[in-house]
Length: 379
Image (cartoon, rainbow, N blue to C red; front, side):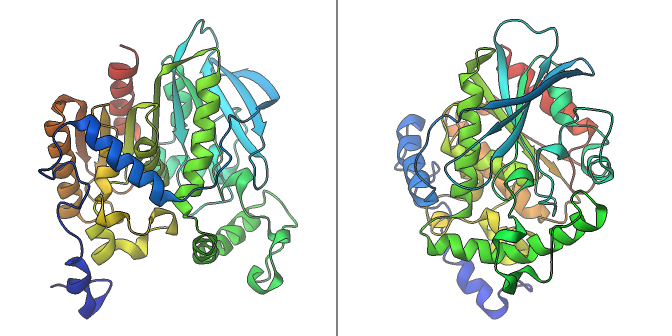
């Protein structure tokens, strides 16, 4: 076996990953997709170990405006834990009646100081860090705005540990602050220092959540489902036509939200598709602690979480030179999802595309994603 993250233990650990796993739809014991999904989704939800107390959040309007052809609402709501959530809703200014709704899921990107601002734009006055981020990953565009402009209500919110939901240094013991003090909000230096701190704080968050009997995906899915609750409750949204999309950490959230919530009718996962084997042997060091649900790989391979949405349409967009994954495992994930959708009798509702270039969701990829939503959510 070539060098891997566990050295001499790698082959032994990899052999523990059955292919297909116990609750894979590829197992012969499963025939109908509905019966399989009921069993596998219940197990997935059980392993997530998220917080309880689900209820549609009460959104408080902070202000509203029109910008670049869009009607925009800046909202805030309080979840049962942590600081208030900031969110924005975008839709065409001239829109009337019910529109399809999409939850825009912001990325990780090594930047926890920012959240929803990474993929939105509500004025011409952008922070330099936002400009750089959108140029690096999104071809200079705010993709949530561009999707909304095509006739959608797009909701983008900060999720657990990002933006308005980030850890506040003053709430943490001095022993782990590493000298960080929030004294100059929004400054370039403070954003850089905070993000360095946040990267080193991830393992502490993960271990603390495990000690509370929870998982990190369980917590961010709770946040994201409450956003979905709110989006579905809006009078200008058709609750039967809901989707989600995101790059990288947003792609992870797309996988997990699609797997957990039957209300998601169409998904686009960008730059976040591989297998548990890839994480195990090759790439765990490139990824956040947000990825992992202990015990789940014995039941479902990573792409099969997204496959829990079958036969609802899912689009996966990959980059061939993405350093976060290996090409063989991205291709194996594609084969797994192809098999799931073929067995579900809906092969045309799954598509994977491979683009040249590094980790990104550029304008060409956005064009394909938007056309996918138009095909399946506007019908």
